[in-house]
Length: 178
Image (cartoon, rainbow, N blue to C red; front, side, top):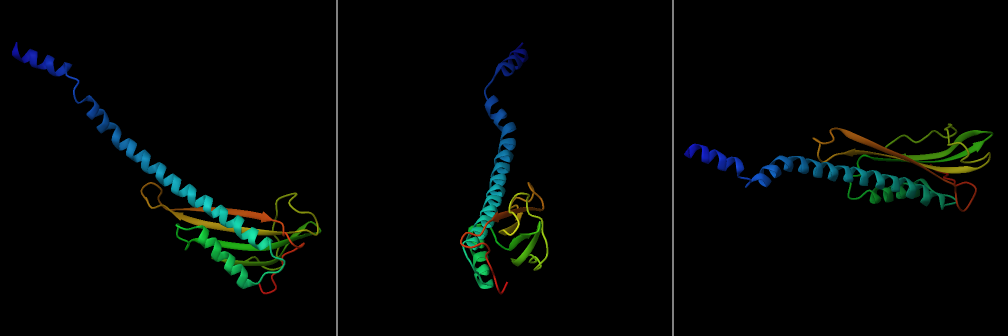
């Protein structure tokens, strides 16, 4: 009789149920929190990289003539925009492209971390971006994001963005020493 009463008392006891439920859910909630934190870091890196491409194109499009040293200074500004993320894997390229008889021809190009486009080489611009005789500044940026939590996102994630902007003060931005 005494045993039966003890078992009945334990089976009806609900003290500690919350602690057991928490112990079961805590690892899942912690993993979810860490995953969301890492996702936000990656998203912020991608957004900053997009701002770099827009800023580089914008600063160059405001010039009638720019030098290679001026382009390099603007690339350095791009590195500042990426802070606090490391900039060792930030690669930038800016080119001036003119459409002549339906062919998009590179006038000049300068890059850091990637190869510049060859002068007089061709590239394909989006349809209806420019008409014959018009020029556009093309800023291309890539960024290799390495997760701080490699167990959540192993390996590198490469972000890339291309930004197109028409020159503002002249028909074409020139760079004689690029």
